[in-house]
Length: 533
Image (tube, rainbow, N blue to C red):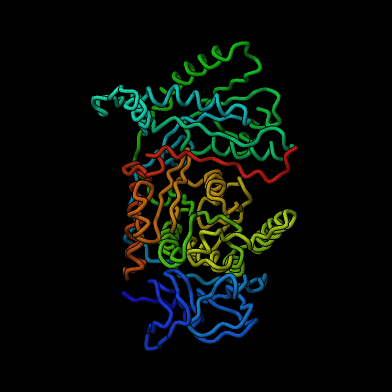
């Protein structure tokens, strides 16, 4: 296996694929480099002597500026470079793109659920929604009251406690419950971190996200809890729901706790009425639908120095294939586009989207500055430790998830993504806040790369976890669904992308259950932009 990699001919940085040691000489395509420092795998070293103030390139783009002189063969660190990105050009010009050959995929289908309005679901859930954080307990209690008796509980850690008490289980399989609603995939509860104690805009924004989840094709119906005095009133939620879908007609139960003298009475009725509605939710069947009905969310978290080399570009190929077939893809995490703005602007089809994207990025940066921070501060300690030294290095590698397709829409948090093509969806880099936003935008499956490992999931959409390297795939096999480590070992991106798309099809068909669902990792965090009052 090759020890080092040159990603682009314009680069003056080389990537270490294996741990390299000071004094070691490595070669690449006839050129030799004697290392002046140790260079751990995933980190980068200079291909020539670099002067203070000189620009460093990776992926063919500027990613850093030297803060001091750097010798040829020396590792770059946070001590000798700082974040740098090229200026953005808003001039109107046509983006040239050659779509991939998708002939072998054009007749492929997945087993989806076609709703009355023609939208396609990849899952079928009953959703429990609290309009305010003080209703989280009621939402979770309703889920608990229904999910385990109806056969939807995946984890059985309580058997460990029973065994410690001497109540030894005879046979775990004997305890499994057959599902009386075989076409219902689960009962999922959201928990929220807002709804009151914030600004009116926060309450409206939360209701907008909750309405997007309620209207999502993967949701068959919903039970909603309110306290009564919260800012996120049910009339705001209903208005957002009507705006999202004027023809919304799913089963909808509502309980306002302050109208009840006894909580047990309210919960008893909520359980009974929800149980009755599950019969309606169960009246669906999967059928073959074209891949053009896929709406991907492409996400990365716990990134490492291999993310932009293996998993992210593999996901980008899958995204391009789906888009070329008439499907949709959503690239989010705006802090992780800091340094990649030029490429994003160049790919926007409409001039208004170029301007809108830059405005959203500037607003985001302004909010960060109010907190004495910058979106360029995005790389975490784990990212830096694994070779993502500047935000531009992280961002340009992260943007690879979006492939090379033109950008057809730029959306703020909670706004619907385009029905086809690649959309930019404004979210934080925070894993759960970002996935929450992508699902609210309409993604019906999320493909999520990680180099260090993350358990992130979602209540209503499968999150397919993709490892950038085989070490983490094997070490964290309980949370990783797919391994892109073969790319680091020399396999072609195209071949691994074909395998990943097959896994996406199985997941969308419910033939494969993602690890985050098996672990009951049902994460939902609303991006609360405003101040608490």
